[in-house]
Image (cartoon, rainbow, N blue to C red; front, side, top):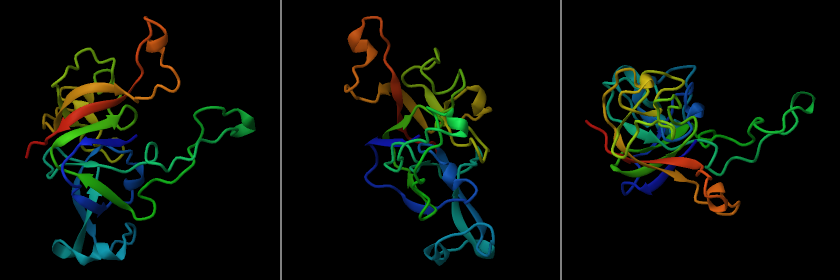
Length: 221
């Protein structure tokens, strides 16, 4: 649930107000774009500096993960909880003490204080963690996808406020005929940790546990 900067562009595009109904669902690495809401909206809040700019009919700019195939510009979101230093563990206990793993996460989303999203638009080498930030279908951005090869074209899950923006190979089920290429797959990587002696170091038959998908981001405009 994170975007990792490997060899990105020199600087991020900037920090922009996120759509309130979506911003705290970002996990990092989703493809996002700009849209607008009424500056007088009573439901979508924003910091005062956001109101320094406007579009026609007194609308202001927000970031959305509900990205149509025709939307431009295309950027990567860099906000979330896990791997962002805000996760303080998970709840152990739950209903009658039955939760021992996978409990509710403790810690705020990085956008909680400002409601803003950091955006990366420069071509470069990035990585996204292999969890909900990627399309997890059998033909998605997963290690079990036998058709995924180095250089495979990547697009995003289009037009959804809840799962939109997830990186996925062109031609996958979740791509929904979206053929707009935003980058190309390079490789899967482990988390790089040797502290807990990975299986592949202890056994010849052990398999690596991959944590990141590395890709070259260079969207078609």
